[in-house]
Amino acid sequence: MNNSHNYKFYRASMITVILLYILVLVGGFVRITESGDDCPDWPKCYGSWIPPFDIDDIPEEFNPSIDKVYGSWIEYFNRLVGVILGISMIYTFFKSFYVYKKDKILFFGSLCSLLLIIIAGWIGGQIATNIDGQNIIFQHSVSIHLYIAILTTISLVYTTHTSFVVMFPKVEKNFIYTSMSKRLLLIIFILNLLLVFSGSYIRTFIDDNLLIHLPYYLRMQKYVHETGLIKFIHPILGFSMLISAAVLWNHVVNLSKSSKVVKLVIKFILYAICFQILIGEFLRFNFIHESFRLYHLFLSSVIIGLIIIAYERIKLAND
Image (cartoon, rainbow, N blue to C red; front, side, top):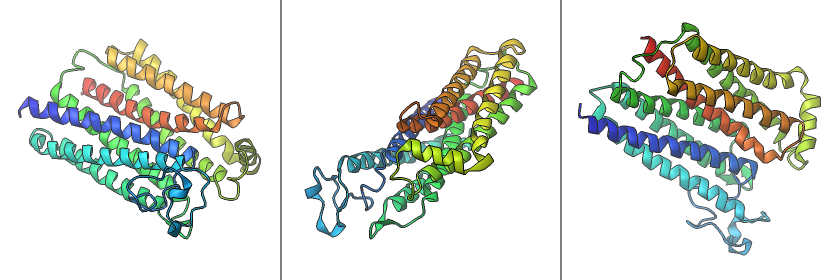
């Protein structure tokens, strides 16, 4: 295989990964600003390709009831990033044809990522579409949209890192790791996914239409006082992940002959988990603004990507 083809695929895939993380961040911003319904039609916004500059610019047939238009621009920017991501993913998939013979994972990984992005885009369009002011799918569909974004992250990061390994198959040749290192990474990966699921439950509870008019701290108080033992699951998962990451750090630093890259990635995982827990606890006790929920969720997607890179590196060294 021509190495230039693999490099071009890797470069295209890396750009797509960056765009995906930007979209996750922007999508979270749409959620916390409650801008998702500020463009009630899709793909246009109030029947136009340009969002309104003023409430008076909204056509009468949409029965405008919003008191702001900046949310329309936030939601439209989210869609624009999504379109750019889709184009980038299509280009990446096109490039995968040139590396198919060398490693079929690159082709099928790109195909899977492209299909997931298409599905996520379709669901996002359905969420944004309103009928008589009511969203046509239930609030839980926002969580489904999130789960698909997580699956896309897993697929795309794995494919991208695999293309790097294809170019540099001996990158971990002189290093060795304990067998427990891979198991700990899998444990952290599973705990992180469970955190995403339990976090979706919390979000669904506190953003319920019956509570959304209340200040965030009152909604959080209701969650703490009305959900029983389930309110302990999310923090327990978080601290369990932190303990697992600390044990992993000991294995990588003290019990393995590790590369600088793996050490750095594990360190980032540890730091990300610490920041995630701090943000979560501060949100729980109303020490910080609810907008920090955006970063709390974003860190989960970052941790997932880092785990995949670390796992593949360790697997490559021990094979």
